[in-house]
Image (cartoon, rainbow, N blue to C red):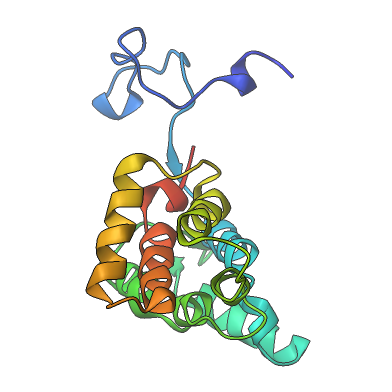
Length: 182
């Protein structure tokens, strides 16, 4: 409930010089955007996409989680053999986010997933579907630029709404706005 924890991550003219990455001491005028841990990113993907509802048993889900997190394990080479699981945006990690099994499940539209439920709800118009995807991934409504991009995608996919929604969902889940902790 303190002011420090309620700060926005937005950079404004009043706080743009407060950047610890530039080598200056932090003044804590705003929240510093940071990478999520691998576990946080994994959980965020599951919550947003409900991809875990498309998998098999609990044991299979836990094995998939362990495998996904294993790919983020980085040995520090200390005397204690310490390890950490971080998402640093390395090439391997980026490729996994683009083409990995979890992203395929999240964007596949399989029964039980969030995308399947949105895509197959005939009561919701196309533009509202994009709004729901954007809200689920980014916790904000889609802006007019994003709506225009969706309409272009729909035209590109020759009215295949599911394919257009899959592309949009993939882009949202791989965006910095989703991956970074604001």
